[in-house]
Image (cartoon, rainbow, N blue to C red; front, side, top):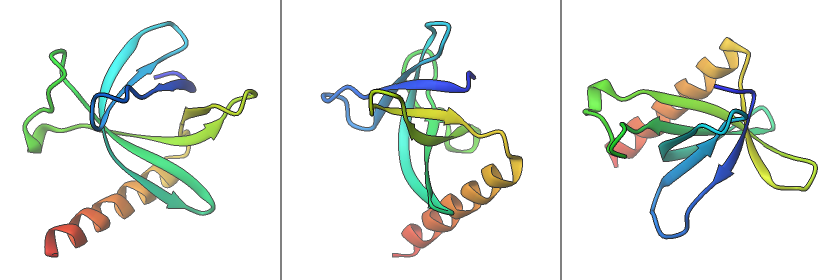
Length: 103
């Protein structure tokens, strides 16, 4: 995935995010949540299959991207190069999901 990805969130589709990479390739994701970590925000997205469907729960793959802004002030998603940050954000995401399941 490229370092910088434009955020194209269609208003009519709940939780579906289409991201276009710098090569023009569009991929669909399901928005799961936004996780704050050390003064930054990260978005957790589930990769959808070619039909725009979520895979079976145990087969789901998530992508974690940092939310930033481009020169025009538009939100963009940026790849996270630090594996420790990615793991910590993922752990926080899992904790939030566990807490939600307990409610």
